[in-house]
Length: 491
Ligand code: UN1
Image 1 (cartoon, rainbow, N blue to C red):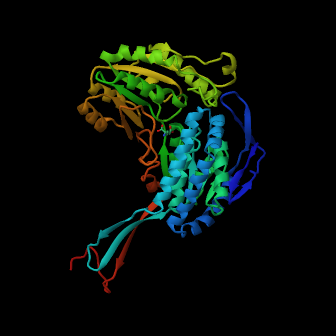
Image 2 (spheres, rainbow, N blue to C red):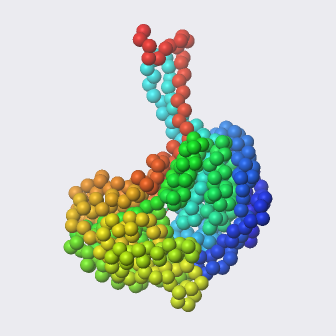
Image 3 (cartoon, rainbow, N blue to C red):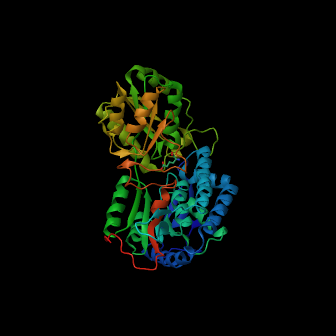
């Protein structure tokens, strides 16, 4: 299967003879190849998008939203197919594949509803017989750069608000997961979105991503991915005066207090640490536990971790799939070695799985470290794999301090039954998302998604807040006094 770009409503081959293979992380099978684009294809897409956006912006927002309803309906119809493709190319277990597609469907219907809201504001004027209001105006052409860990949901968080608000977009999906973008492009074609409103260009970040950021007609860049790449995007975007929305890493913690329901906490930790093989930016990779329940929690976690079935995510019985590729596997493993060198105690896991069929894929054993000090590298850096560090604390204050003592600020969670501790924690945990008595994952699409500190740059994906990324506030003053009124001048 060869994947081609979707530009100006047409399937177009990239010019250069350079291909990247898409490999199934569960077994190494070659699923597709994608022809890599260059600046040339980005230029073509931008020309098409600029032209299309001018007309698109004039389509009434509720009519633009109708396309989203149709996209959502088609995604629903194809849900199982999309989930299967997603599991094959990304590796997450099929149950989560279905969940991710559902997230995209929800986003379609939710943002379609915004087509009938897109609220602005009316405000009293300082002057008599003068009407003042502010409205959300489309920005123009937006560039979307999306990661492989949520190949469809994250793209919907960005593209759906962009189009309902009257923009056209160029989407560069991750090179590891172009098949979902291809499936979405087919849906965009099938619903009859006007050519040029939605464009998909396959290629590397260094070529296609850079060309998008540098193009003067691309006004917004929305990026989700690693902090390393994100800061390069910000730097280049800054030089070109782009509005850049960044959503990057996390080092999310679950806090378990001495009064917590430990069974619930164990479930929350397992799901958010090992779901998606730990490859969510919201994944739990630290457990901050009160000293009085530390050994109970350790024992309960160890007992439950034995039941985690690992294998090809297409098998419904499997709970943990592979990680994305061999480099990821090596990176994760290097952190196990770092943890041991730093003096943390490895309780279970810590190795690449090679038994039988697992050798063909990229599988890492769910790993639990304990006696981890908050400043160790395994407790500070994003590992993006199934590796968890247990850190002991003696009080809520200390737990919060440890939680906040990392450079990221995406998600956090506290298990406690004490209402005072819960309210204190939700106020003091310095993350964009806080969970109480639940793990660190599972954000819902109608709430803002994003983080503080090194996780982002103040913007939010999804929720109504996403509209702030894809609209420009326009203030409008209508003077109906029939005379020249001068604001701020004493009369
Ligand atoms: C991500 O990890 O990049 O909250 C997104 C969650 C999912 C989205 C995660 N709804 O875990």
